[in-house]
Length: 114
Length: 111
Image 1 (cartoon, rainbow over the protein chains, first blue to last red):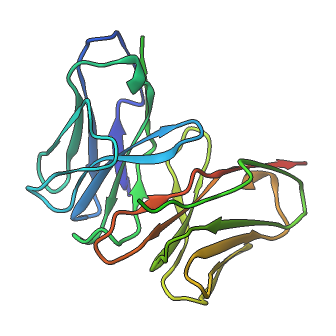
Image 2 (cartoon, each protein chain N blue to C red; image 1 turned 120 degrees about the horizontal axis):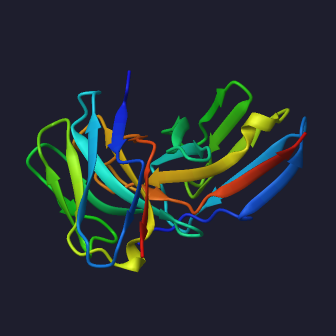
C-alpha cells in the first residue's frame, strides 16, 4: 500500500516563481493536512481539510493556498515563492473528520527558494 | 496556544543502552502520540495513548500517558543503531483540537 504519496521529492525555485505540491492518499481518509518542518521548529500546520470540500487555515498559512481536489488529493500552492518558504513540506491524512485522530505522513518535499 | 516541550534537543547513547524521553505541557491533553522520523522520510506513528495512566508497548518501545494528563514519556530499551532519528511527541487537547507537535529529540546511537 502506498499510503500518502507526495510529489515532487525535491524542488528548487527562484524567488517569485510559483509551484504546486501534490499529495494523494489511498487509505480512504477524510482529513488531509499540510505541514512544514524547519530546523528547531518542529512541525507546523499550514492548512488542513477536515473533509472533502472544506479547507481551513492552520498555524502558518500566509503565502500558501490549498485545494482539496477530491477525497484522495490535497494540493498546496505557492503563488510567489519567497526564501522564507524554504523548508521540508509534509502532507498527512487521518481517518476521521474530527481533528483528533492519528496522522499518517508522506515522505516529504524538500523545497529550496533562492 | 498549547505547547509541548521536549528536551534536550539531541541525545547521544551507546548501543544497548536504554533511553527515556519526556514530553511536557502546561495544558491538559486528551491524546498523546509518539512519532519517529528517519532521515529523508516523514514521521511514522510509534504509539498512541488515549487514557491517563495508560502504559503501552510496541516491541522495545514503551510509552505512558501521565496521570496529570500534562505529560508523557517514551522509553526505548536495548537501543540499536536503527533507532536513530527524530522522536516527536504530539497530542490533542480536545475532540476537535488540532494536533500539537513537540519540536522533537534527535537520537544518535553509537555502535
